[in-house]
Length: 503
Image (cartoon, rainbow, N blue to C red; front, side):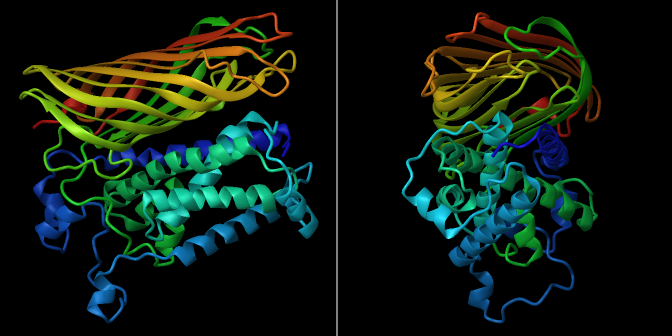
């Protein structure tokens, strides 16, 4: 579909609101070890709470439950309800798009469905934000409607894949798109599981404190599909996320301003701007937590999002371990290693890149000294990647293809006061191509941040961010783009130890 500029701004605003509300999960990050008062507030015995640390405590006057003890204890699961809810959401979305989006690619008929069933799958040229942000979020709704009906991660991914195929054939009149199928199903699932678990954290210890209504509203904002099923009663008996100890988490919300320090606009008509930004990140399932297991997809994940006045949603990333196992080296090293699934969206002021990928990698924590700890992540793999120039001077600057990608993150923590963070994401030498134009494209996103805790959860941070792109395409003279910025941020970071896991 081809939506007008104001449509894009509306979608960016909605996404920014959603991600800002997701920052409540930072407050939901449980301190380690859990405090006695928190354990004492729940009516269930401690042994039961340890098995399910995220379940909403039952009120004094519990709502009516099935009379059969077996039915009450059986985890809720419904394949039929998940399928019907996804279809209902698609019908509603189709009708809304048909009423408000121009040009109208949603006047679906028996003829258009029959034509799409016999059509070859293509790479469409819809606006970058629609394909690389809108479709993954749409897929996350499919995923979480299934997930909150008790389905497992892999079952929910299958429902997202099937839902995407149904939409491509029967939700739009345009030919089915293979790039949309990949980003909606896989990117949507990798994003959706993070949102699902963060919504549970919001319910457990998130925004609103002891006010259930605010916590329920926060969970709905983070994951509307999960919130819908919870309010309708079907999510109350969903299967536990894990058995055993709660995850070690590190949540952080930063608010501040940055100034461009270096830039090269290249083949873009966009102008560089000072930024006022909100930056949220949550790392969940950090290695080294005694009693915690990494048996299910996304038992470890890292979610991050950044919104700014200059470009709306500036970055969004969800990366989690699909398969893996823990390891250790002596008394001072603990880690996990395995296969990671990722969804990345980057939109600095001059260009955009998005990727849905698989990588082999590892996370680890190493005690270098009694007061000095190093945490890190390294992975390498391949992703289905798209690049585009913001306000491009000429056509031929929007491409798809499979591209190698690497991620490196390092964190040095001294005591309970100081932390130095270094990170890079690279998408390079992938020979990113389109059917009509060939070329190569390399993108690097790097950042460095120095944080100092002032008191309690309050800290300040000095942050440097660089976004660089080198490319070579026919009919495009410029070969580079770059945007660097330096900013000062207030940081809200609950918990102790600046994210250190103690074993």
